Image (cartoon, rainbow, N blue to C red; front, side, top):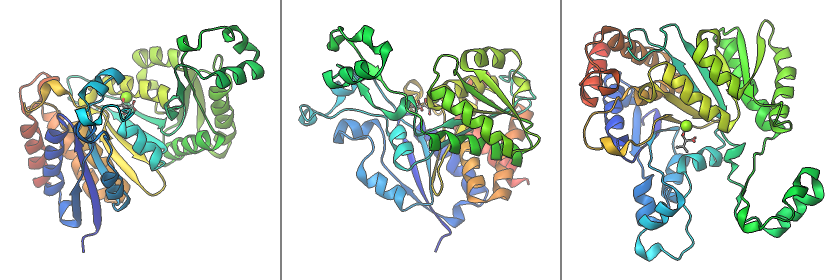
Length: 377
Ligand code: IPM
Ligand code: MG
C-alpha cells in the first residue's frame, strides 16, 4: 500500500497545464512512488453540465484523501453563469458559487497560508530580499456568503430595532438595498492569530503585523486586534504591529522589507496577498495552502487564465511551489527542500523564463529545467 492518497483537482483552463508540469516535478523528486493519486472533477465544466461545480463525488474523494492538490477554476458573474448552464438545468433555481470558497468552509480549512518570498534573479522582483508570509483567515468574514438582495423585511426590521444607525435605511425600497455580512467569531480570529504567531516563533520572524481597520470597522476588526494583543503576550520577544489595510497597501509598496508575518481577515487577506505576490513576481509565483487541523488543499493563487488555454505558455512555478508546501505539510522536508532549491536555481540561472518573466520558454520547458536541477542534487 502507498503511503499517501492524494486528490488532484486540475480544474479549468491552464489548471491542467500547470498540474501536468507539477506532476513531472513530483515524479522526479521521488514523491509519486509513495502516492496513489486520484484525479477529480471540479470547476466550470461541471457547473455547465451538472449545475454543480463541486460535485458530491469530489467531496467524497477529498474525504478519502490525505490532502488535495488543486489548481484553478473559472468563475463568472451571476448572469453569465446562468446563461452557460445546460438548458435542461434552467428553471431549477441553481446558483453558482465558488467551489474553492465552499471547500475551505466545508473542510474548515481556516488558514490560508501565502508565502511571498523573492527568489533572487527573478527579473520581476520588487527587491531580492523580501520574505513575506500572509496568514489569511479562510472561513469567515465577508466570505461567509450570508447576503441579501432584495433585503427581506424581517431582516431590515431587525436591524432598525437593534441599531440606531440602521434607522436611515428604514424607509428604503428593499429591492434597492443589498447587504453582505462580515462575521467574525472569537474562535475564528484566535486560531488564525495563533497560527501566525506560532509560525513567527518557529521560523524566527521578529514581528507579526495584524492588518485590519479597527478605527472604522470597530466590532469585527476590533475583535481581531483585541485578541491579538492578548495572544502576543504568550510570545516572548515577538512584536505585534497593527496596521490599517489601506495604509498597509502603501507601506508594502514603500518598505516591504520591513515586514515578515502578516495576518488578516478573509477579504483583506485576499487583497493583501495579491499585493505581496506582485512584489515577488506576480501570480506566476504565488503559492498557497488552505490548511485545517487534519486536511489541506494546496493551490496557486492564480486563476484559470482562459486566454492562455492550450498554449503551454503559463508559468507553472506557483503550482510547483504549492506542491512544495504540500510536501512540507506532509512532513516530507527533504523533498520539499529539493523542489524549492531547484526552483530557486532555475530562477537564479535565468536561462529558462516563461512569458511573464520576459522570456519565451514554455510551461513544459520550465518544468523540465526544474526536474533537471533535482536530478543533479
Ligand atoms: C484567491 C482567489 C479566490 C478568493 C477566488 C477565486 C474565489 O481570489 O484564492 O485569492 O477570493 O479567495
Ligand atoms: Mg485572491
